[in-house]
Image (tube, rainbow, N blue to C red; front, side):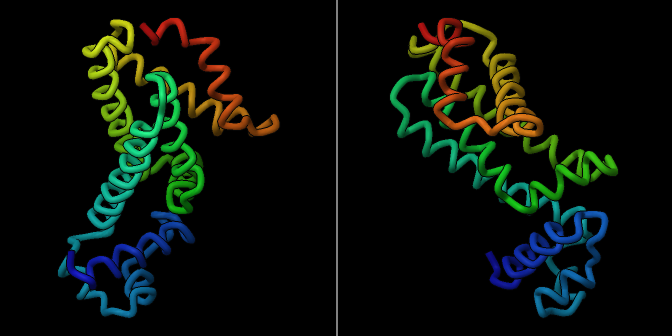
Length: 189
């Protein structure tokens, strides 16, 4: 990838993280990147296209985190847990994703809603594919893998994000234990 394009994307990430999508202008991105606004337009038609490409790169990073967890896990359940937990911790700690989630709640803009929805869709698709393989190789009970991936993703979001709004955050181990209690017999063959 062109070094200037990378610089522009990194600068846009910073601006989006600081000011949100709505509050960021192409002028701000150009200033942070130290390039002219015309340089940005040689790579991106508009701010929406720039955000879309950034989201795609973040999805690739999340998938890499999930793949690493899947390879390192021991049982099918631990692999699923490791992948989902890793993705959500990445999402929770990444400043741009935090800002976009906040902007979705505050303004509900179409662009930020679509960006966050595309992340969710990709994560669920990624998990669905891995569950299909686990079902095929007999390490997971036969189920609707897409529905199961969706339910587990939503449950993880609730446990990682929503629970701690009013309670002490749960540890990785506590979340794994809870899910084994509630879903262990359902998922494992």
